[in-house]
Image 1: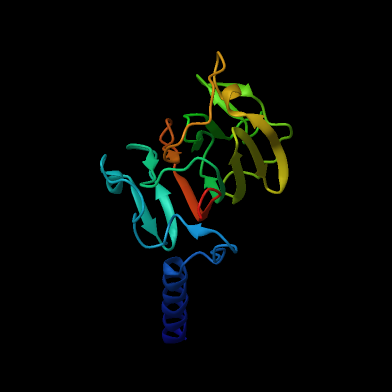
Image 2: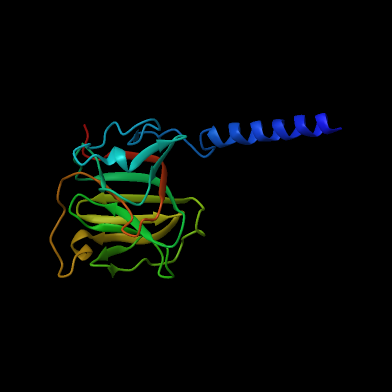
Length: 205
């Protein structure tokens, strides 16, 4: 009996270890017209000037930030684009997506919800609805910047609808500005995980 129990424990341990090493089951292929900003293996396509690899890692198909280091910045510049991105954070805190002009679409685990514009730690445009899922659950962003206006969906609910980019600043700052897209590392050392990071350049010919 002792040998049977030992064998069973070893089997369960082995299966748990294998499962922990498997890629996330929610990984997807890019939608038609989109390309992957993260290849699931390394930081190809992201600027390495500030050594983000010390703080941003590819882990089992996910892009994970340990809550430290620089923001993660794309090598390519954009002006008009659509961005899909799944994200989750482990504890109450924040992260976000910086648009080319510097406006921040906020990931904010607070009662006000995520998806609005934040300036100087306060909302300059609050999300229309609170659509966040609980901590440690995956959320899905759709962000569209076109002709200086931003639309954001969080978990298929519209939280900003064609908001002029200048409202991302106080006082308002005219946009849009062409430049890279950046993912914010959490200023509160919160672990942030990303997957299915896809972009479509609306100006590409």
